[in-house]
Length: 349
Ligand code: CP3
Image (tube, rainbow, N blue to C red; front, side, top):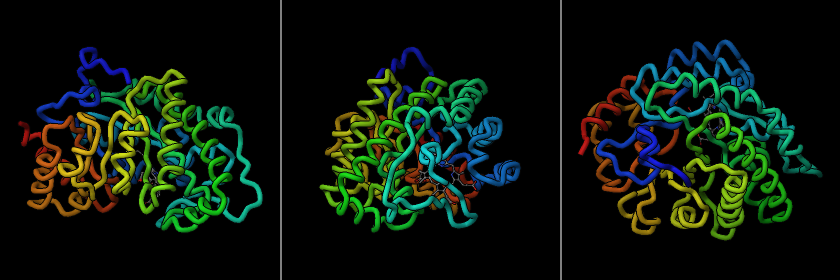
């Protein structure tokens, strides 16, 4: 990691360099999205979600919408983790109210995929969006690029949809070598995808390991630890110096191993993590990001203010990036987001 905080006033970069700021930098997962009426309006311009992701002007506008409403410290690229399998030649569709659908690899004789270098060429519109966003960002706002982790993306490819991962775990127990080969292609493609985002202007990279939950330790090692470590080694070999935030949602008792063994620079923690109690097991001074329950942005009021206070107390004096413990939901209210940010800033120590 190379973050020289003296070169940048951006609070997210300072926190990632290990500074504990009086007010933590604030951004939140899915900050551009369906809880905003202006996003729902914009989204109508490209009814197919993948087309929306590949339209740099629309993606850029989606990123700017929450920044106009809220004083946030970071923006995240508008895209999706499933552009990677799409670029590798898999069919990816989004069904309204149900989520993503892919043709499942489980049950197919061959899991052959396209070439990682060619895949990244197909993602040129994503990098064009990064350039446009970077050019239009308000001062002090850092730009985060992202990708899904190899395992999380593989789960959608294997079973063709979200939901429980029973079939994916069974496939990994039954055909470990075949799953390893799939993960290796995803490691290479994801490293190149993140490198291209960094080149286009992303200052921080986040890896979404949304499906770290429910894994026995040997599978956590095979499916999460080893591919993530390989991804970060590859990124650094490609010359990428940006700090990497890993977000292993649901890692539970494996969280400390994830923090120590993958090479991530900062750790995103989900809502279920009792940060004060877990922190002694984590690398000293590792910047931590999280972890307000997104449901509090549906509820608002005193419960929201108490939730913010509890998160701030829980993170104590660690370098902290304020965030939710998972993405904001479509039912959340923008007014509650304003109240959340005011509560974080009002509580400055
Ligand atoms: O955070 C942001 O503001 C950046 C944009 C972003 C999206 N998806 C946009 C999106 C990011 C970072 C993602 C990551 C993503 N995508 C993850 C990891 C994070 C997580 O939530 O665990 C996952 C698992 C996906 C796959 C995916 N994409 C699913 C399961 C869905 C359906 C969700 C649903 O509730 O329908 C999507 C669609 C998606 N990605 C939407 C947005 C704004 C909604 C689609 C729409 O506008 O119609």
